[in-house]
Length: 532
Image (cartoon, rainbow, N blue to C red; front, side):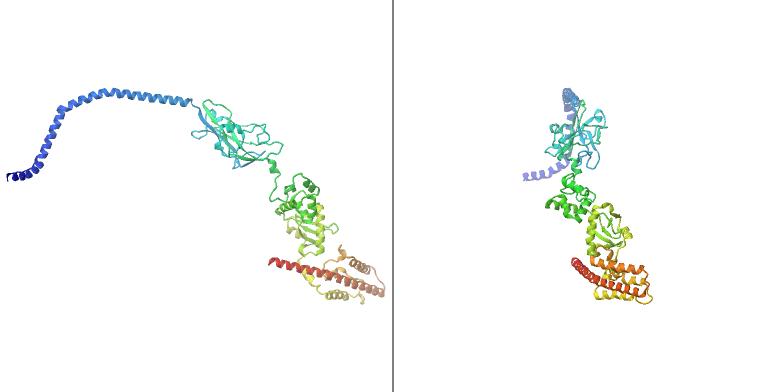
């Protein structure tokens, strides 16, 4: 029983002691400990710390000073090493050379500007604009491109081995040494040209190189070189073929015609010196032109095809008149001999409206015009040409042709005209005979314009009848016939001759007209077929 009460009492008192006495005891212990440390342990520890500090500070200070002195020595040595080391500089081309360069022509950059070379610091990459290096003298050299097109892969050994020597005339070279003086670290390549030997030079790839001539203490300068570029002999450009050629190009610009070659000389002897003259002769006489060239079928075709690439931008009208027509009859063509039309009695007739005989005569006149070019009259445009030579409309030609559909109608028209001017009637003078038998009136009824008596194409029978009739008419107009009986006799004979001539001419002309109408109809059918 006592034990149980004792345990219960402990259970009740322990929490009370912890809550009431615990803080008091804790504060008491803290006070005692602090007092003990201050009074007893503090002085003892303080003396110990002072002793340790006195012993360690000199040693630490010695170590610090030794390290500082060693660091200063390293910095001093580093500065001395840097000062004694050469300054790193390099030359650099600021512009790339154009992709192709012609010998004898100034070398320029890709943008057409002058090429610049600069001396730069290889650390900062900026041009050296002060000091003796900024005004250094730089030598420009020609280098072989080599197999490696990458300029970054070159080294000094490659640079020296790639220099094209001045005595090597088979390769692109400078006619004389080229030097550039830098200004504030930059120099300009002005009027620098590559030369070639008298022998033909093949196209090849090269580079430009640059190296400093002067030597500088404490500085080393690295050489510079450009990307590779193609060098062409300028004579290749002078003799090149042009696609397309122009009308005024020399004839040797055409394929398979060499300058000063045998075909070229033969063409010059035939007065064919320009492409336009080549096309002219090709138009009027291709067989003669091929014979002059003396080329085989393949080369002939190549030359002709090249010539036909030419753009015909000449709008001039060319006129050539026959020597016997006094500028009334002739041929009209363009600069390369293509027929535009013919001149008939001072009027322009388009080639599609011309008669077959006129077309044949026009081709002959074209050949004559080629041989007599000084006699060709030039008109700047079609307007000025038509102002001097009016155009005959196709409608009027068609109307005149329609009047000759029936031979009976034609005969009645002509003979009726003669009957209306009967010279046998009293009071009719000799002048009345003229309109009844005038050949020009007859041919105007036939729709043929001027009488063929004055044409070189008149066949002998027509010419005979026409001249006979004309002579009789002239006699009747100039002679004064006293006797009325004689007048009637002459008039009757004239009328007989007129009727005979008209009958013969009508048959002949109707035959020709039918041929022309048939050919015209065929041409119209062909045009419709082409349109469809």
